[in-house]
Length: 461
Ligand SMILES: Cc1cc2nc3c(=O)[nH]c(=O)nc-3n(C[C@H](O)[C@H](O)[C@H](O)COP(=O)(O)OP(=O)(O)OC[C@H]3O[C@@H](n4cnc5c(N)ncnc54)[C@H](O)[C@@H]3O)c2cc1C
Image 1 (tube, rainbow, N blue to C red):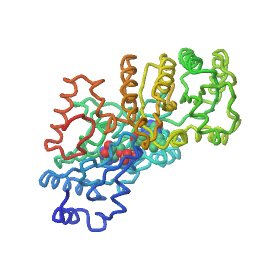
Image 2 (cartoon, helix red, strand yellow):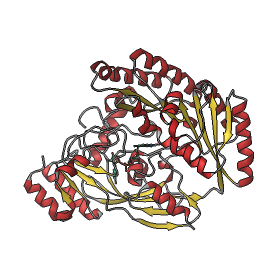
Image 3 (tube, rainbow, N blue to C red):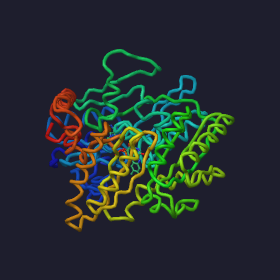
Image 4 (spheres, rainbow, N blue to C red):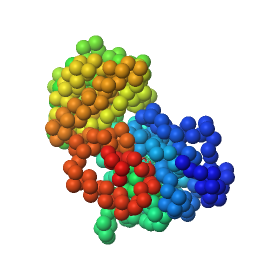
C-alpha cells in the first residue's frame, strides 16, 4: 500500500496534475484485455526518463511495486498491478522523434500507437511491418515489451526483428542505452534482445530505435474456403514450398467465421469449415503472378472457392473482419481464456482436430483462428464464470492443450507473453535450471523486485 507520505513524494517528482488516486482512474487502470482486475494504489504519468528514475529509486527505498503500462491491450495480464503499487502510465512518451529515410531507421517514444507510426512512415514510402491485430489500440512500447507478432510475421518477422536499440531506465534508477543505430553491431551482450519481450519486468523503455524497410509497391488480398482444416493446412505448406511467401496467411475455423459473419463482405459456403485469408505484396507484376500461383495451389488443395478481393474496400473489410474475431467470439460465452500456442505449421491440422476433441470433452466452445503461416493458433476457451462446472473445466482444458502443444514440439505462447495468465504453466515448457537462470537475470536487473512483480515466474522471484 502506498502511504500518503509516499504519494506526496511521488507528486513532487511528477507534479500534482500527473499523479492520480481517483477511484475511476484506479478502476480504468486496473484491467487489460484479459478482463482481470487488480486495483493499483496510484497512477503516475511521468514526463521523462529522469522522473522515472526518481520514481524507481523511491520504490527501492520505500518498497512498492511499479508497473509500466502502454494502452492495456495485453492478453496475458502483463500491465496488471497484481500486488498493488504504482502504475507507470507511459502516455506522455508519445512522440515520433525522427524518421531517417536514408538510414532506414526511426526513433520513437514508447507510447506512440503502432498504427499511427505505420501511417507516418508510409509518408516517406517506408514500411514498418510488425502488425498485431491490435495495431490501432496498442503502443510500440507495449509491442516491444511483449515482442508482439501479428499478421505479417510469416514474411517479415516480429517486433524483435525491427528493434535496433533502446533507451531504458533500469529498476535501480540508472538510465542506459542498449544496441545500436546501425544495421550491424555486436559490442557486448545483446541487452536489447533481452529486454525485448521481457514484459516490463527488466526495464522501463523510454525510447526505441526501429529498423524500417522500403514500402512494397502493391498488395492483393485472397480469400479461400476449405472443407476442413487439414485441406487449409496442406495449402499453406504447398504455398510456402512453391517459393511464394505471402505477407499474411490467416486461418479461421467455422466457429470464428460464424462470429464475424456480419462483418464479412462475402457469403460463407455452408460446407466450409476452414478459411484462409492471404495477403501478397511486392512489385505489381510479381504480385499478380504470385497471386495466380497461390490461387492454383488452393484450388488444387480442395478449396471450395478461391477469390481475390475485387477492390481495396473489400480487402479492408476482410481484414477488419479478421481483426474483429477476438472481440466477436464473446457471442459464444461471456468469458474466455485466450491462448496463443504455436506448433510446427505442418501439424496445425492435427492441433485443430485435437481442439475439437477437447471442446467436446469439456463441453466448451473453443474457436480457433490465427497466423497459419507461423503455426500460431489463437485458441479461445469460452466459458461462463457463473457455471461452476465450466469454470472448473477451463484449467484442466488448458493443461491438456499445453501438454499436447509441447508434445508436438510447439510453444505455449507465440506473442502474447506469459504475464500472469500463463505463469502457472511456464514450467511445463521451460526446464527448472533455465527458469532459475531467468530468475537470476531478473535479480541482477532488479534486486529488490520492485518492477512489475508477480509476472512470468510461477513463484515469487
Ligand atoms: C483485439 C486484440 C488483438 C490482438 N492481436 C495481437 C496480435 O495479433 N499479435 C500480438 O502479438 N498481440 C496481439 N494482441 C495483444 C496486445 O495488443 C499486445 O501484447 C500489445 O503489444 C500490448 O501493447 P499495449 O500498449 O497495450 O501494452 P500493455 O498491455 O499496456 O502492456 C503490455 C506489457 O508491456 C509492458 N510495457 C508497456 N509499456 C512499457 C514500457 N514503456 N516499458 C516497459 N514495459 C512496458 C507492460 O508492463 C506489460 O507487461 C491483441 C490484443 C487485442 C486486444
